[in-house]
Amino acid sequence: MALTREQEAWVGVYGEIPHVVNRFFTRRIKRGKIPYVTNMTTINFEVVKEFARKAKILQRGAEFPTAKLNGSVIQSVTPEIIKDSFPFFAEDQLNRPVGVPIYVNGKKVDNKTYERDRRIAGLKQSIETVQEEISAGVFLKGTYKSPDTKNEVKYTFGKETQVNKADVKEWAIWLTQQLNEFSKNRKVSASEILVGEKVFYEIQKAYNTSSNKVIPAQVTRVQTEDKDFELHLNVFGFDLVMIPQVTGTDGALIDCSKKIVIYNDLAFLPAYAGLVNVTGGVSTMEAIDVLIRETSANEKTGEAETLGESGYCPIVVNPSLIKIIEVQDLT
Image (cartoon, rainbow, N blue to C red; front, side, top):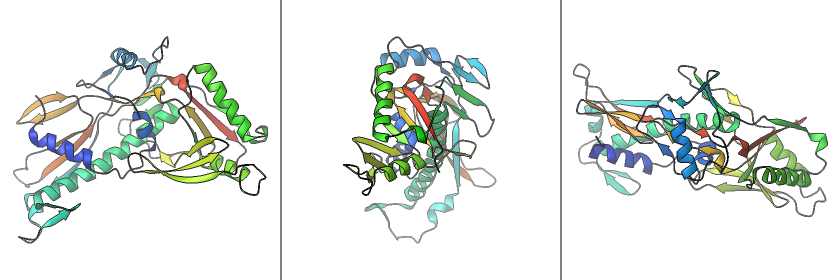
């Protein structure tokens, strides 16, 4: 059974609402790819492997990486559903004087539409917050832990390396060497260089206007395609992007301040597990990235709910295309 017309409209509203959450890692995992979406609650890695090969995401000759759940090798994963809800009552749409119009983005809307869109906006913020926490853990550590069950999914992931600041005599030469090594060993170019806050400031300091460098570093504030903003450092022909402060699904800060991440976009594949949709008392499975539905009002309390759900599950398909270096002795 497909979505109802109302649900199609709700999902459309969800998609049109501007992002208010920093989607730094989610944006990069999704960039330039068609996501894998299934109507099954379980994501089968054999099926994902074929999808990734046909989509030219999995490198030729590369083996699909191993995934583990709580330390045991798995051939599939059943991601826990990201969900939230906003309760409402019939009188919520009557809380404004009759005849007083509401204008949103220059358009006149009725009370019912206004209240519904406000709930969906809240759901979007909540869902995208968790999606970004999951994305950060997968992007930086190849793992994420469910905040509810504490189940941990861990993908094959390259070992992080270290370098002492004293051993980097010239940042321009050292970073060029790292990029050349990345491309030579992996047969693809790096899509981007991400740097932690302390690395960002260290390079900026080394290439300031009084450092006798031919071209000093320039910091720019860049607007992204989804209207977010990032700090970029343009220096010696490179565009370095500062990694913002991020937390994992456990709420703990992931310290990236001393890290350098060199990667190619093909390292990751966004995937979505199926979601249960209940309409007219009938349950069906939907292949969709985000599902919005409403429950009927409770006979005793009159309370109904607008529900939002997502089976978001990013997958590391090419772990060799991620290189993470930690710079020691930065203050």
